Image (cartoon, rainbow, N blue to C red):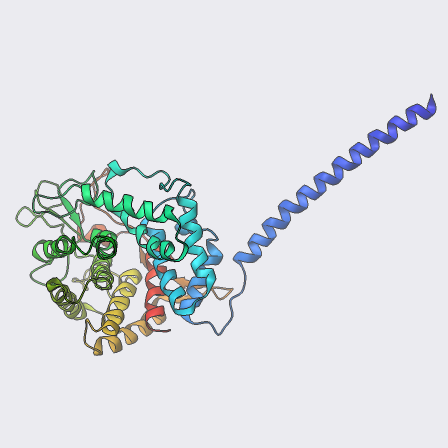
Length: 413
């Protein structure tokens, strides 16, 4: 009897012991993974890195999955990710380092299901921002021949085909913003639209692409400064619209950056033989010449770009980097005179001095990034100078990281 009890006790002891050991192993695995993740995030970067590589590694360490960019909590098909990943694509083309390509591909595969549909994408929103990530899929499809990428490219082309338009033919920014063209919408749609129509449609839609830029020139360009307003309501009904012109009140630095990048990246695919090519190059030269009139002595740009003397107005990093990139690329491609490259280089050096610090592990920290600003909605955003100036600034938001990476890659910094 004693032997039986003792045997049972031993069995129970072994079970408890096994469970205890399992618990210890599980705890070690949990803590180990946390330590590894922390180590990965805090991995010190080498001193001899170029700014382009340092910025890319900063992003990779901070956001192991691209959908996490800007602290996003759930996978999202979004222009912020595609802006950053476009910069990664250009860095990959320059370095041939596969980790940059893999970062792009992992995002696409996270967001596109096995049938070739974008997860949680709703065509009926007609959000022009959703078109932008489609740019990433052209090279992915070319390299992998995965039909899912082509299906999504075609879905986004369908969106443009049915996107609501103003009476004069401009794409609405979103379904919820009737009759409104926003300047960032040109960046969101036109490079994709141009690449698609040239690649798959024998360039049949190039007149429509040019029409979008023509509407900007006719309605969003300020006649006094030659710079661009953020938005235009053709109906002139929304509260922020100028009753005579329909434009929003303020010239926002990042809006200028969006427009200049839209031009240089659309021209990447626009055939030189097309009669609109020289017109688009002319638009780029016009805004490039005008934006130089409003840079600081060191070569940077303000949040409210044309009113540098306004109280509490500030030098803003994302707009400065976008403009620097556009000037450098425009010069390299021959759209702009070669002296714009020297201007871009000087402004880049000023950017590093003004905005960039290295964190404790050598990561890039970019200051004075304007938070996302918009117009209309609830509560109503009136788009005044004061509204833009009071927008909170952040460190390392995606527009600044991406634009700095683009400019550093373009300038081989």
